[in-house]
Amino acid sequence: ESASELGKAKEASAAELVKVKAAGSAALAAKAVELSTLKESGAAELTKVKDASGVELASVKKTLTGELAKVKEESASELGKAKEASAAELVKVKAAGSAALAAKAVELSTLKESGAAELTKVKDASGVELASVKKTLTGELAKVKEESASELG
Image 1 (tube, rainbow, N blue to C red):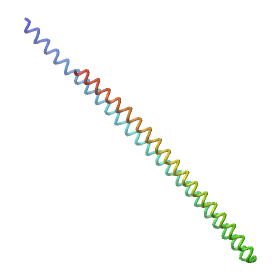
Image 2 (image 1 turned 90 degrees about the vertical axis):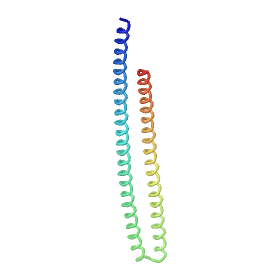
Image 3 (image 1 turned 30 degrees about the horizontal axis):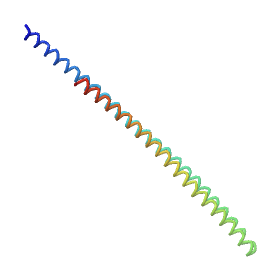
Image 4 (image 1 turned 60 degrees about the horizontal axis):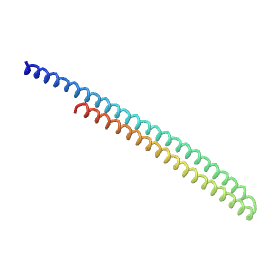
């Protein structure tokens, strides 16, 4: 009778171990899918941010190019008028046109730099956020693995 009871207990214990292993494997697989989904959504969000930043930077560049063209046209117009005036007046108009063009060039350069700096900030913030999500998920995955190993052990 003892041998029979021991045999039954071994069979029940083996069946329970199979159930625990299956449950642990299923939980680990679910966490792996969840981690994969979060990584994909994080990558998609980062792509959206990069795309939006690129569009905004392109818009700023287009606007500044248009403004620069207007300044050049205005300078050319002023220069045409100055040709009709005296040589001294011509020198004054050229100086004013050059100063305005130089000021717009500095303004354009400043706007490009601030746009690039803003884009870098957005990229850095997105990278930090993605790294934080990855760290959190890696920690959660490690916990699930430990729990599964503990349940299996």
